[in-house]
Length: 434
Ligand SMILES: NC(=O)c1ccc[n+]([C@@H]2O[C@H](COP(=O)([O-])OP(=O)(O)OC[C@H]3O[C@@H](n4cnc5c(N)ncnc54)[C@H](O)[C@@H]3O)[C@@H](O)[C@H]2O)c1
Image 1 (tube, rainbow, N blue to C red):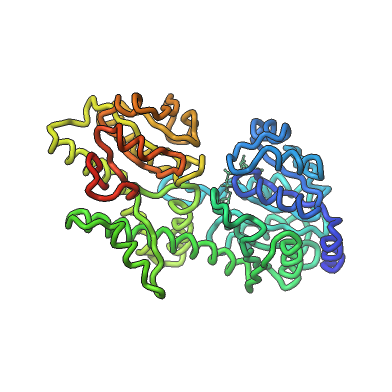
Image 2: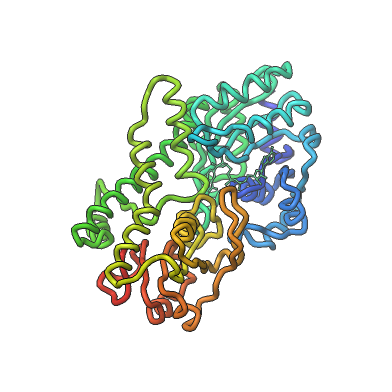
């Protein structure tokens, strides 16, 4: 029966459902629509659905026009899970956050499956894309689906295919990022490969769903650990009056065996600060301690505090105190040129500064109003940068180095700048690297 489904996919007659129209699901749904499939996007966030139905994008690098064109083609948006009956492929892209104590919160994934099971039918492919620990597809999805009386590899096809979206990266898009696919059985893999190669240029098949799950974690842990390492080196370099950015630039001239990573005020985003702890948790279940992940986590988590400590030290040298100081944080997105502020170190800096009694504002060309967040709800609006507005502040902290900032205007008018991104050359008057 996998043959029938493969034939249907080849002819682009299959209907694809994407569950979770977030940073991962929305571009994926649009990509399948553009490849010629009928796509139904499902989400539980009514506000998001309302916007998307009108063709209004909430992600700044996805243009309204692109969504409108897809809606005019064959893209529908709904919260009605009963429509899963119409689907041949079900792709799950819902959040996988951490609970307190850094324990995986799989409730979004398991809730989605539980909402879907009444509508599942024979000969569908189900693919999980959310980042998670090895074993999730086999241990959490498989038994829930088989409870409906369907047999894997025969009645339905189960794969894990991790998303590798890099928001704001204009060099790579969903279609051009190679896609890892792991199937629960050989038949599952065959169908999975066919599904994704219908709209993505390169497929990388692996031998199991567990390998696919672990591959995604290796990619993200590799980043988290190396960023932790370079952040630690920054702290040492700072104490020794060495410019870490000059060091990284010099080391990058080595044509082999070195990959540059850049220090900053901490780690942000939905992935890098969170995903490594999915492996830590799973490893603990089998009696293994993931020391690299824990050490990198500690260093990266402590970076906002280190930046503030250094700021206070520099203020003291100038006979100033943080209490009552007017501070402007530049950039609250978790990385440059995006509007996503989840887990952002810039936001953490605001929180610490406020606790220490500073009057804090922010400026971010990508985030006009401070968004409601799980942990923070500051009633702030982005300050427009002009020579007058910049000069009003005692201190500017550059947390995210957006391209849209006018750095010469900032440098010319700021009284004092703490630069956490190495934008200004070391030795620049009124700039302190941190
Ligand atoms: N953002 C990235 O750059 C990125 C990159 C690679 C992998 N990932 C992984 O992809 C997954 C999704 O991340 P994201 O950034 O797209 O998250 P997101 O928060 O932007 O989007 C998730 C969407 O799922 C919706 N949702 C929640 N429960 C649902 C349900 N039961 N049914 C349907 N929709 C539901 C939410 O309303 C939201 O719109 C996570 O596991 C993440 O780790 C993210």
